[in-house]
Length: 450
Ligand SMILES: [Cu+2]
Image (cartoon, rainbow, N blue to C red; front, side):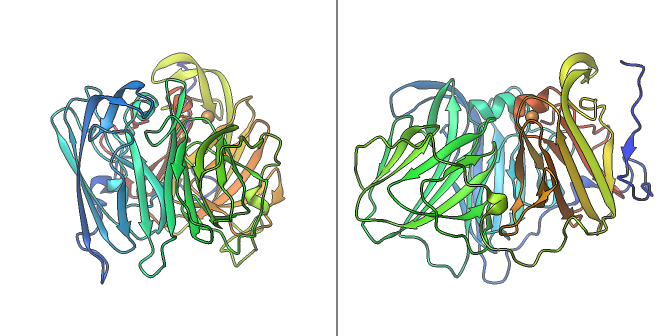
């Protein structure tokens, strides 16, 4: 295996890079602005990464890696146009830590990919992130260093950016789902959350999946609209009821509804985890059909379709097999038969229209995640999306499926492009997308940067 050399770059049918890897603008120069947008304010946060024993609401103790000693980390909020400034300090995480802004299209130097966009923040060190909160919606942040361990143990938190001019919902709940040693929790609550909501009040539920496997949600007792996917608004979301929602690893769904006269209950993987307005029944949501976001909401103008002429078209075949991973043969999670860091980097030029075709030839679901860009879903299994334009940062490619997505290369950098089932990424399913003329960190094949 060691003798099979991969080509170093995949141009996706476009021009070869004018500058070889490692040449051009250093990614560390691609930093966020230093001022908010007009009318915005500065949101300074200091976050300390440290080990801690944290009790969930049941009293169960978690031997955790934390931001600020809590599970999840501190909820970060901003209003659209604000400047978010986060100083990350590593108190005692021996493996090192970063913050990656999942789904937030920050300048590349703020992306938190150790070995690629910054050096890992070692014990005792610190790093300052700054970016403008241009995207309103539900996002999250997490470490990208040995993330298959660090995120699982608790190095994650929520980032919610609200539009400057919008009325907030009467009840607005941020609900990050995470599994600690087999125990599912929303926030730090491993029981059943209870919230008040008066009949007639407006409710927004922000569902976040911070695990590596999908979760299935059901909302009983009320009709609802799926108003945002991955922090991007759905166009004309229709009201539905008794539909299950399968949320990919890393993904977010925002649900909105008017509180009915009776109680409502949210199930996660079939169990009630949140009660609104009381109630004690145990709704059976397991048989509900899944809402398919590709065929939900109303169409609107999109910048590209399956018929667009793309400057680059990359095909990624996801599979399982023996391949080199980090220099050793392994039973790997592979992309085009190879494992990280032997997968050729993808090269694009700024302004390119880029299409990905992602083929899952394995028996497991792969939640695909490109850093730094939302992607527009064009089609699944060759069938075009017919609903609202569906912009996502993480999409579940289930066994046997083929997804086509596209984006404009408008955020220069060297970006991780990987499976967000983090153990899969660690077993090789990760590569880089490099803009011609941008240099990642020296020697930066992103070792350990997952
Ligand atoms: Cu995967």
